[in-house]
Every structure is written in structure tokens, then in C-alpha cells.
Length: 300
Image (tube, rainbow, N blue to C red):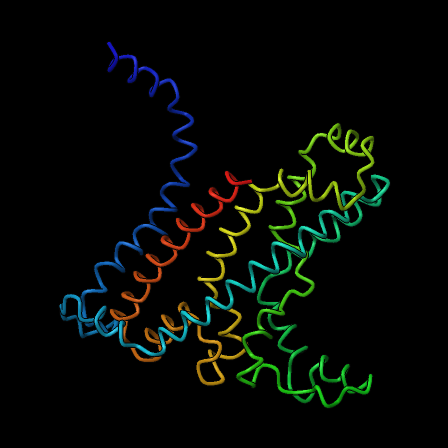
């Protein structure tokens, strides 16, 4: 009877499964299949053409002694820390400012102003910042010279000590984006009765942020941290366009290292091994992050 009821329910809801089927097929073809193929190819010495020799775990052994790989991991840890700090503060403050504005028109105007930049292609933004951070003719250096701070000018993307932080500076002031939308949605879901009660108790803006917004937006913070961690570990286009991983290896990221090994050195099997290890690292970091955030919420 149970099997018959289950079969009847599945048949009844078949139209919903048909709507989901195209998305599942696309994900399988462009996500799961390449990933499973990478796991398989990581066991081969493969140049993408005529060399395809099984070598077992040799690629992984070589990876453990790959200085460039470990440098890229250290770089990405710095990027993760910087990205998380930025996206836990600036978008949150922007959402606070917007939701505390008096008048719906003002709020809608600034909401639109912070959301519209999201439709600009990321490559356009990256190339714009390449012009801003350029050495001799860059907008930033020209501005510093104009205000009498010529001693601070430098080739920001061509100096090892500043290149990575210059890449992090892209999208300054770091307001528009998914984190802002998450905080904004979270703020709008908080009942206005809580703020009214806080005002009756004499609470000011800072007290309301501390005792209402911060505790009730913990789920949004968890999503932001998880999302930014994954985004940071996948960072490729900005270092590729701006510095190609240089100067030296100061801006090399794991994703860029995968690309260089595959297309510059024709080591497709080795790059597949890097991808598999990177996937495991991201999964472990995400699990640890979720556990730590859950424990901190329980303690709160």
C-alpha cells in the first residue's frame, strides 16, 4: 500500500519534476560531470592531447612539495580574512544607513543606487580598477600627486607588498553586492515593534544595532561568511587580469595556479589534482566555519 501511495504521489507531482529536470541536467553536465572527470584525470600524467599515462597518486605527492601551491594557499587565506572583514562591516553599515533613512523615497533611491552596480560585469569593474591602480598614469597616483602626497605614489599592482591588498581594494567602498542585499532583507524582516519598544526604553541607534540587529542578523552573517569564503577560494579573474599572479607569486591564487599548470605547462592531470585538493579544502573550511558560527550563536 505504501509503495502504491508513493507511486501515486510521484505521478501526481510529475509536472513539478519536469520543471526541475532541465536545471538538474544543466548542473549535472556542467558541474558534476566535470568534477568527477577531474577526480579521474588527477590519477594520470595528461597533457591534454597525446600523453595519458596512469600514475596513481604521484600528482598528489608532487603537489605536497609544490611551493607555488602553498604560496597560493597562504595568499588565499589573507584574501579570505580581508574579504570576510570587509563584507561583515561595510555592507552591514550601508544596510543600517538605508533602513534608518526617513522617508520611503530616500530609502528606495539609495537601495537602487547600491543594487544597480551589481549588474555591471565583473570584468568591466576589474579593468576600471586596473586603470585606477596603474603606476604612472593611474588615477590613484595622479590624485595623490594633486594633493601633495607624491611620496606615497607607487606601482600598486607591480609591488609585492601592495599587489594583493590592491586587488582586495577593488569594489571600494565594498557596499554593493549580495551581502548588502542579505543584510537589507534581514533588516526589513525584523518587526518594527521591537524598535518601538527599544525607543520607549530610551535606546538610541547604537543600542538598537547592538541589542536588536546584531543578534537577529546572525543567520545573514553566517551566509555572508560562507559565501565569501567560497568566493575567495575561487578567485581567478582579478589576479589573472591585473597581475597574472605576480609580481613573483605575491598574488597567485589556487584557481590561477590550476589555470597556469594546465594551459601554460600542459599539465592537465596535475591541475586536476590541484582542483580536487582545493575542493576538499573548501568543504573542510565551510564545515568548520558552519560549526564555529553555530557554537558562537549558541553561546550568544
